[in-house]
Image (cartoon, rainbow, N blue to C red):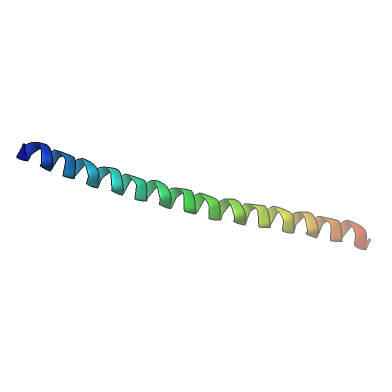
Length: 54
């Protein structure tokens, strides 16, 4: 019974740390995605201003 409790405890620690890592990856992915969208919109606005200025 004691081995089962230790096994469940270790399993819970591994699962919780795995969730933390996945959460960090998704947060970084969301930030990079938002940054990419802002950069693309900036480039489009810059291109429109170049062609409309001539």
